[in-house]
Length: 96
Image (cartoon, rainbow, N blue to C red; front, top):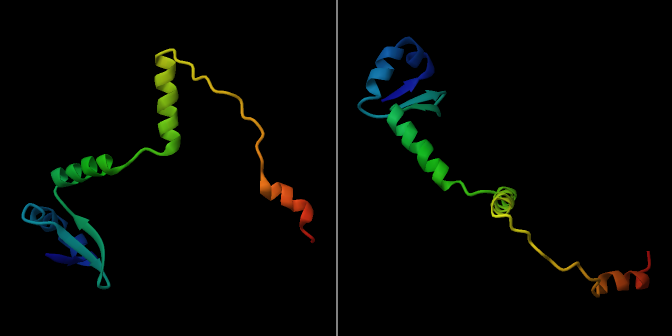
């Protein structure tokens, strides 16, 4: 059933009871503003949402650093060496 906000306020108990049958949609001036659903359905949504989230690059590197620290692993890398950069070399030829 669809509800207007005023109806939902006045008949809140009825709204909550109706959720057992199906989600209840609440509208404000013909625009959907809320949906009342069963708590179990909401918990399932939260679990699904958590599975859909992918860690950020920062979180991934933090996890990698944590794992390396746990395993007492030290990443060895060679220092960066200068390399040709044609863009920088062409700056001398650009007139401003």
